[in-house]
Picture 1: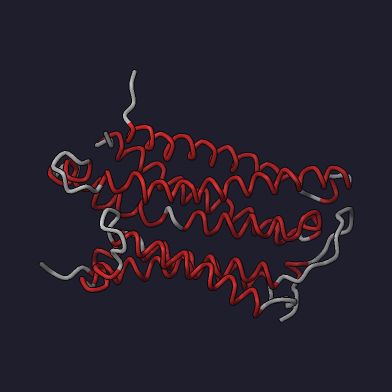
Picture 2: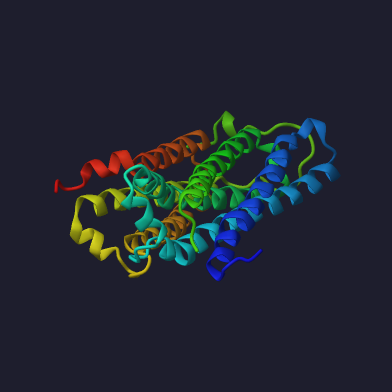
Length: 170
Length: 123
């Protein structure tokens, strides 16, 4: 069992940071869901708010780290002009060309929207702190944008997994 | 614009002084602007070879380098400028979130390959 230097980076980008992003979303969403004033003591609000801050910032940082490593470390190997680069292999075959023409072209762009939304959500959670529980409308909107960020990253991640299966970076 | 029922407080625990919504409006609108700038640059790079070349700030990354750097700069600058402009103010939260959703949606459409590839010059 051996991974090359480039494969290690692909693992860090797709599986390491991707798994962290997924975990942070799951934890953050659960804390958002439970942050309702009528059901919590003051201590409960403080504890949940703290966990929510951690979850949203971890997700935002993971999202930034994922797009930065994807764009600036892995993508150059993918799009290399060498005949055996993943992009060259995909576009050379009409049956796989759409993985690049549609899949990678979409993935490489929309992925960058995820950290923008995740940062806005994390900032807002930190800004309001424990008083977020008093702004239930804002809490619900944050859940929507938090989920949107996750879904956008999910589309990019899923396309990345399929593209890697079709033509991995070696 | 004043706070709407969207920002209505509920009784119960939760400490802290009520904070103005302005800084939250700033970061959300900035995120929407960042998404929109990314979309517009994606479309322009497809439509115009000169724009595409200009955006190639890194040879190994290609035009994606310029698109993403400019979009992130737009996000940060918009956040700072709007943050200063909206400091201490309470714009209507539902309007801000709606505008953010619209900006992000337009950004998503502009980065959708079927859409932006339609602007590619005919070969």
